[in-house]
Amino acid sequence: MSEAKIAQKGPYAVNVEAGKTYHWCACGRSKNQPFCDGSHVKVGIDPVAFSAERTETVYLCGCKRTGNKPFCDGTHSSL
Ligand code: FES
Ligand code: FES
Image 1 (tube, rainbow, N blue to C red):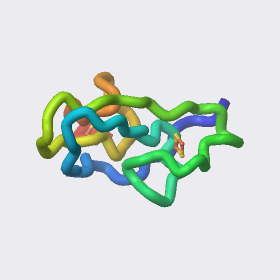
Image 2: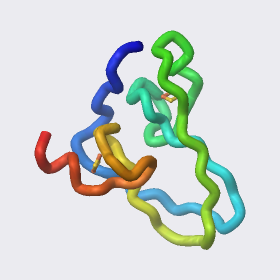
Image 3: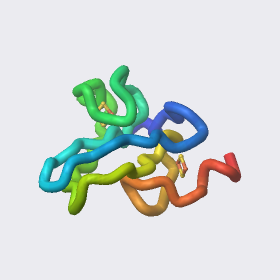
Image 4: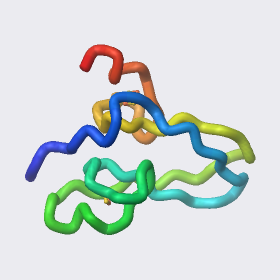
């Protein structure tokens, strides 16, 4: 299994809608960051699905090194 690629060294602020399911790119190779576009197939890292509990802005990890997938936990500041 390859390592996750750093898509960007900071979070993506995205607006999510209550009740919708999203697939966060964990491999860092999606061209549609921070969401999965299927590029992980050859990498062996699966996306992380999450459902939005409310309509709000969330901060999804761009560095792919967070300890709280799919959300940014500040790990990017030590990269
Ligand atoms: Fe990955 Fe913040 S962007 S921990
Ligand atoms: Fe990265 Fe699917 S493209 S997890």
